[in-house]
Image 1 (tube, rainbow, N blue to C red):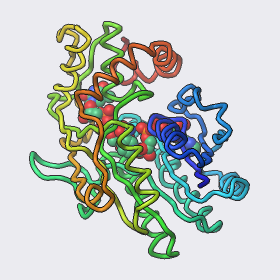
Image 2 (cartoon, helix red, strand yellow; image 1 turned 135 degrees about the vertical axis):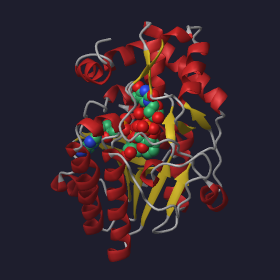
Image 3 (cartoon, helix red, strand yellow; image 1 turned 30 degrees about the vertical axis):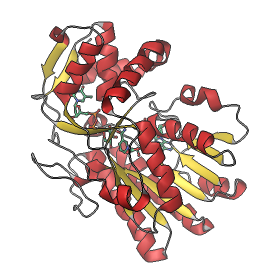
Image 4 (tube, rainbow, N blue to C red; image 1 turned 120 degrees about the vertical axis):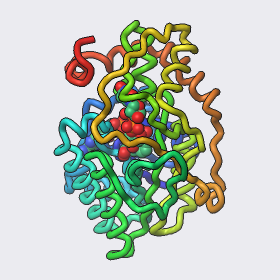
Length: 336
Ligand code: NAD
Ligand code: TDX
């Protein structure tokens, strides 16, 4: 099989590319990524010389480029990870989220339709469902009710994917996963930000009362689920992905501090995120029952391994936390 993975230099995409090259010894993977601040070729250093892997720097909204890649590499399946992915950045700069997440997706869909590839998989998020109260779960039937510019742009993309299935009969799937964690997670997101700030003796900025709930899944379990959807997903279907691992943010922060032997005095409650969704929780029954998926990682093992990874890969995250990142950091949190 020949795969086009977009956004493969980011956190989840890079873990997925590595996973697919290992899991399928006869698959070829083309990675199209424009290398925004979040894209980093260091994330795939270990596979760069693999003859079944090919990197192309470019924009998913470049129709001519995408069409040429589908042709040249005889692509069977396109998996779209490319996105602007950080909620806080979408609050200060929504335009680029619409451009990449909505228009970029439409360009990919059009190229895939014109070339008649076998399948298109859209990597979406549980955030398109909005926010839950204290009980209940998101199922695939939960109405879309996004609250942030980020999640609204992802919901817009999902609707386009569905429209291309209904209108043109394209073979598409949409996956909606809960919060991922694991190696190569960009240090603007909660878990890697807290690990690296704790190590540097910086304040750990907790939004609001710290009681917002996220449902965490190891990135490797996400990759396995997408592999199953590629091979077994029914045309036009949505699959939720999550491992029933709900935690409040403050629990996560305290756990990280305890594991690193650091004091809770480093915790700093800061002004809440605008429109901050209170709780996400995925019901993954469809994926487990129809496609036979279940997570391998427990959170205890996954978070311990992830903290070890950040301890062992300090040069990776130090280079990410420099330059432009520090401008972003000061605007978001004040001078460190
Ligand atoms: P990320 O920000 O780490 O990576 C995004 C990648 O896309 C980067 O490599 C970036 O360079 C690339 N990119 C951005 N704009 C592009 C463009 N116009 N053309 C080509 N490449 C472009 O994001 P992530 O956390 O790895 O998320 C990947 C996907 O998974 C996203 O679609 C996101 O919405 C979705 N998702 C993420 C999570 C999570 O917890 N991180 C959970 C569910 C779904
Ligand atoms: O400094 C912080 N302090 C804080 O309290 C940051 C960065 C976050 N938080 C809170 C906000 C959220 O309740 O932690 C929680 C997790 O925040 P993020 O890591 O920014 O993730 P979230 O907003 O939940 O979105 C993530 O999961 C779904 C990804 O970034 C999205 O791309 C994905 O779709």
